[in-house]
Amino acid sequence: MSTVPNRRRPAREPLTRERIVDAALALVEADGLAGFSTRKLGERLGCEAMSIYHHFPSKQHLLDALVEHAIASVDVPEPGPDGEARLRRLLESYRAMAHRWPKLFPLVALHRLNMPAGIRFIESVVSVIDAKMQDPELTARHFRAMGYFLIGACLEETAGYAKGPSAAEPVDDDFVAREAPHLTRVARYFAPSEWQQTWQLGVDALIVRGNADAAAAAAKRPRPRREAPRRRAAKRNP
Image 1 (tube, helix red, strand yellow):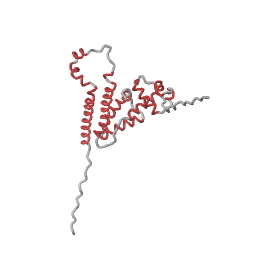
Image 2 (cartoon, one colour):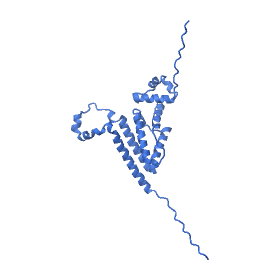
Image 3 (spheres, rainbow, N blue to C red):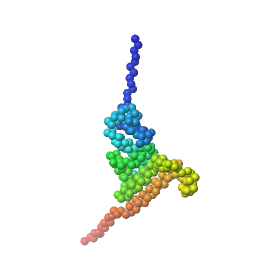
Image 4 (cartoon, rainbow, N blue to C red):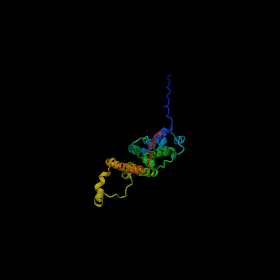
């Protein structure tokens, strides 16, 4: 009498928050934010969509977790004497994050980051700028200006002009050459191959102005007074 060997089904990998986040990031990059759903995520994970809600109460909670994961990957340098190098490193790391998850980045860029991890991230960035400025107004203004440049540049490079909506009847190259000679002359420098130099121009402009403002603020701060050496009265013999 022949016996049929018992074939056990391979053990299913347990569902964890980390596994859900990793799969959700991959799904967003594959289908975009508009095409993201917990149903599709469940199919990718091999589970029912309801199983995901045991780990995340809602789709919004899951999207928040994706944003937290993205910003946690940004390298915020530890305190150190070279403030300029710290800022450059921070900017480059944020840009790398945007290119790592280009389809998620529009959500990261517009998210208020009003969750614990987001507030801690903002605090760490502000601390880098404040260590250089040592002035609350300058710190606030340079933080905002850096954000304008950083978010705008990253959105442009990952989901911007070249990927945006087009006119119903776009003009041809002959029209552009005839009607926009200045645009035609400079257009080659808009290509992706030119992004790095344009990025560097923006970063350098931020750093130069930051250095100037920090130096001006330092010059205005009162310097600690030095105590004059005490003069010892000469003792005369009676």
